[in-house]
Structure formats: C-alpha cells, structure tokens
Image (cartoon, rainbow, N blue to C red):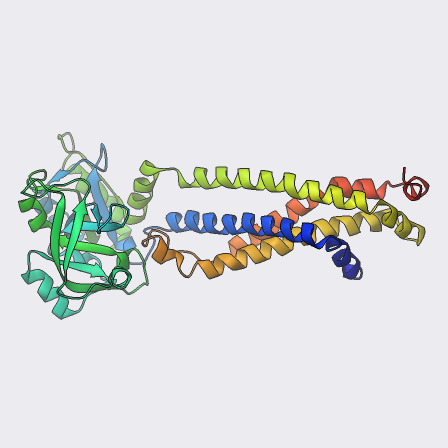
Length: 386
C-alpha cells in the first residue's frame, strides 16, 4: 500500500489506452459472471425441499417417448407413494414463434404435488370447472399484459388440434405464484391434459411423464426401484429419478452446459491475456528511462518488480470487480429475460472468490514478463536509450 500512488499514476499514465483495456477486462468478467450464473442455475435446477419429495418417471429410452396412462393407478399403489400426477409437454409460443412459453398439459391433481405453487381457491375452482381454461404464472401475465378472462392464443410447434392447425386458443382463468420465488414456475402455463388428449390426434391416452410425491424422502430410492419394476421387460420400460436428477438429465440431453461455459470462458480469457499482456509490455517499454531513474533513487530490483506486477494485478482487479458488480445489477432482470430458465443470478461468495482469483492470476501472468524485464534493467543502458 506504501507505493499505491506510484502504481496508480503509472497505470493511468496513458488514460485512453488504460480505459479501453479496462473496458475489455470488464466485459470479459461480465461475461464470466453471466455464464457462471447460467451454469449454477442449471446445476441447481430441481434443488428444493419440496423437490426432494418428488420423483419423476419417464421412458427409459428417451424423454420424448410417452408412457401409457394405465401406469397411474399402479404407481399410486406402490408403497410409500403419497400422490401421483402426470403431464405432457405442449411446446407453446405466444403470437410469435420466438416468444416461447413453457406450457404443460397436466392432470387435475398436478398442483397437489407442487405445494410451492400458489393458486387461490377461486382460481383453482375456475380452472377445474373450465376444460378450456389455463393457469399462467404471474411473471408471464405481467410480461404480456394478460388479464383474467382473456382469450390466449398459443401455438404448439409439435401438436396440431382436431382441425389440423397448430394454433390453439385458451381462456385465462387463474394466476400462479411461486412461494420460493422460482421464476420458471411463475413463467409457465398449465392446461388440462384431458383437453389436450381429446383434441390432438397425436396423443391418444399417452402421458409424457409421471410425478410421484413420496411420504418419506429416505425411502425415495426404494420407491423409484419399485416403480420401475412395474414396467420391467415391457415395451415401455421406465426410469424413475429424483426431480433434481431428472432435470439435470433433461438438460444434458439438450447440451453440456458445463462444457459450453468452460469453452467460451477459455477463449475469452485467452484473448484477454494476449490483449492485456501487449498493453503491459508497451507500457513498461515506454517507461524504461523512468524505471531506471527509480533504480537510481535507490529502488531495489525486487521493488521495481513488485511495482510492475502491482500495476498489472490492479488493472485486472479493477476490471474484474466492476464486471462482477455489473452482473449483480443485470441479474435482477435476467430471470424475466430468460423466461425463468435462469433463476440463480446473484454473484455468490464462490463466484466472487473465483473471479478475484482469476483476476489476480491473470494479472501476475501478464505482468511477469514485463516485470522481470524491468527488474533486470541496466541503469546506464536505460538512461542512454539502449
């Protein structure tokens, strides 16, 4: 800290160059923070106290393969199962194919296995009584300005209705809120499975997956095995997992989020090392005579080395801290922008620690060569311009 004023003065000797380099570092750490939020959000998918009580049963072969509805009473009869509900993927879009809405056709008791999803008794009653009715998340309703009683047109990319059109029309009868503040639950739409099954010719009594709520989470593994035993050696063998494991497998079938994030960040930080390394080399080259004067005044080789390294580390730390702070600000709107796919958008202690460690490490890496050059500087040659 004794020589911080010298490091700061050297760092901003060329203000334009430093600011432009700083902006590049900020953008790199902003991208790091956002991608890390995506990674953490997907890793935490399905993790909750209520989620620990739920098991998901899907087709063993593929999550797009359906299961017979006749499995419902058999699963309900398994010892330790409290409730059984089921759902199908609908694949909705509102007005434009790019406005994707997570829409599910669900059984009448679907909300019973999701106690964290709050629906008023009046809205639940209205939903139960209207086969064409839908429930929509509060976040989604605010986003599109929907009102109770509105007719909501939804387009399914997969399922046509009985008229052969993929344009469906529903009546909004209720609002869903999440007790846990889950943006995904507040951004989805639920419609009646019976309406879906009777309307589209492509379903015919099939179920996408079953959700079982268990009485004792400690018995979950045993219950999962018993459920899968019901369909063993049949043409519809099942795979029952915890909600967390099922969600992770579903995500992995679409993409390896961890690999994608790591690859992008590797490319970003490699480019950052080249950019900032070139900046530091140029900055030290321009100050060769000034560094020689410092040595003439009594600064040791180690002190000169520390000054240059300190300048490099300070530049990276400034950019890193500002970039991660911006992630926290952007994170407040990211759940809405992502349609609820990304929930965990705050920069936690682990992300801050990793970001600071990366900034410090890159700072030392790019500052090492120019710092060693400055330390080995010959005073006579430097002052003579050689």
